[in-house]
Length: 138
Length: 138
Image 1: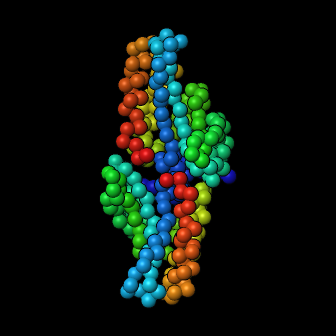
Image 2: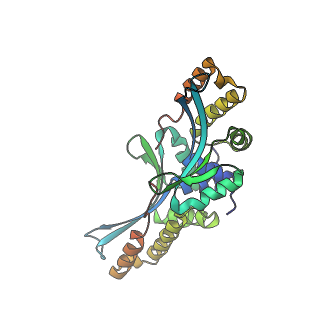
Image 3: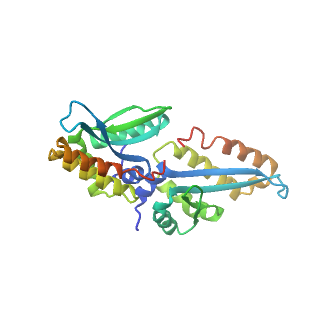
């Protein structure tokens, strides 16, 4: 199945999620691990769509989510920065999800500079991450 | 906001719904009223998307749904047959929602021939309508 860039933007406006987990982690200098993640979840009957997204972006994995659902997931910072972020810069989301995307991008750029490895940086990232996915329609 | 046809297809693949209600109705000859409906529901923060869809298709209404949600809704058989159906024939949905769309279209074409006004026709429509929106991801 071949996907069109505008179709992907529309589909992700509906079904996609940009999320940054900030979890306590004793082995990290700043005491926290920062985990950015782009996901699209679908009922298993539409798993072929998730495989088509994976093929389009050339990264990520398709895995079982829960409750008969499957997820396309990209967690690699390199792939997020080099493939996912540039795509949604070139083809902007039209819903308020674009606000989350911009925060997601900002955190990734901070991480790229190593900001998340220092306490102050982690605190700033936590503040931005907390403002994401609020009032989600899910 | 100007929408692209492929963006709309992707968004409707995620968020749209093709539904046919078949309700008992004493004033109808066949004893049932057949109500086809195309809807897209969004959180109120993205109501501008629903207005953009209404402007694109040149039909339908944007109304309060429930729980802080808004709905774009097309119920006119004429508008469904002349605007919504041709759009999704030209720009096919990529998810299994396309199976529902085809049933939706079949019922509309039957209604256009007046099939729903006879008991046998209503029974056939009820059978098709029951097979729609099964295993929905919602």
